[in-house]
Image (cartoon, rainbow, N blue to C red):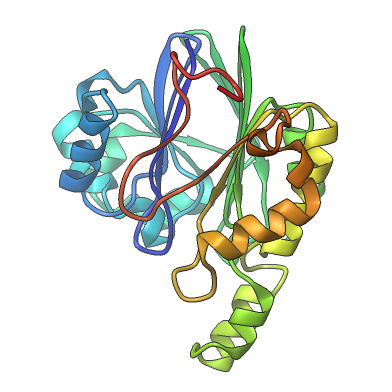
Amino acid sequence: MTRVINLYSGSKGNATLICAGGAKVLIDAGRSARVLAAALTEAGVSPEELDAIFVTHEHVDHTAALAVFSRQYRVPVHITEPSAAILLTEPDLAACAVVHPPLYTVEIAGLRVSTFVSSHDSAACVGFRLDCADAAIGYATDSGYVTDGMRAALTGCDTVVLECNHDPDMLRTGRYPAELKRRIASRMGHLSNLDCAAFAAELAEAGMRRLMLAHLSPENNTPETAYAELCGAIGHRLCENGGDITLAIASAECPMTLIDESTPCCS
């Protein structure tokens, strides 16, 4: 049975648990090993049960827990070569690392994991498509725009975790320095609510039935603002409006479930 649980998401740290096809994997390992282990336990999975960790990119909000977590639990860490060149200075992490080119595919216990390249100001940044017999799951955070690879990989997924980082007006009028504002809004930055909503409408037409909005900025977004933008694009398709798409919004602090064994779409 398939489970998709975002353990926490945002500038403080990111980690998502996916159980599918017989595998239990993490995407990213932000915050600390203690916090990550506690969040996994709250989600009903012990760290020792994990089959792999997949890393999107080397930025600290996605990797802060990796070194200590690897030392404690010896979970294989799949990482791209450019990110590995920056991160693999810790011997215990290096010993657990499985290094790949940015585009790669691996199979773990009935789960096929393939990457696509996103657009972000890191050494390399990838998203994931995860396929098993009963699910097709897309995961895309940290991209300044919807790349061709992202569109190709996520189209046809029934379940998608998608960045919805900032409201352009809040970013423009907020307290961030001008240089940081330009970085976030650039094509190497983060996906805006507007771009997320437009892409979500495309994915809905292609069969998406579950969507989680992720990596919301605590300074330049709110769940209510992100939700309102999404409603403008696919509001009539959401379950609460009698439609066929289940929506969840990731939390910065606690696990948020998109799929669980006992939670069908539009339950």
